[in-house]
Amino acid sequence: MIRYFVAFNLYHEAGLRGFVFPARIGCALRSRDRRMRKRNYTKVDRGYRAARRKTVLIVAGAVLTVYLLASFVLGEMGLVKYYRMKSQFDSLTGEISTLKKDNAKLVRDVQALKADPARIERIARDKLGLARPGEIVYYYGEPLK
Image 1 (cartoon, rainbow, N blue to C red):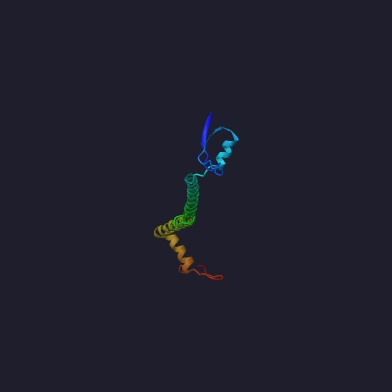
Image 2 (cartoon, rainbow, N blue to C red; image 1 turned 90 degrees about the vertical axis):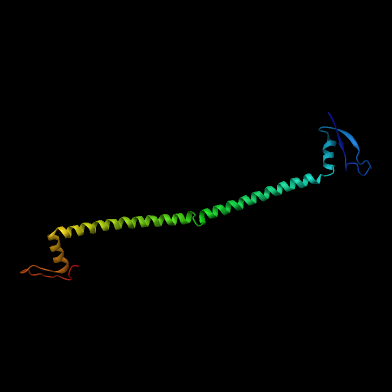
């Protein structure tokens, strides 16, 4: 198969500009012809632009990824705040359960004081230091609170 190539700069010195000559595929003349041909600057510029566009897109994607990752970790509702709020939630939940237990104990004490006269007497003796008529109270050390 024979292809014809227009040599632009190949034989410029010989004054054969625009000379058409046959070249076989795979021949050394064809590869030399490719190297010596006049450059098509629009194609080169197009390739440069595509490479530049690709580089800009990669850099923009990397910057966007870093920004999104930073906002995910350090942002207003990021992971740091999430873990801080989770620990606060856990501590408040523990405090609520403790207060519920204390409240239940106090409710039992109130019900016992309303219904059990022996308990009222014991508290009066221990806390207030009261005694029945004819009893003698001895204190050893500090009085119990």
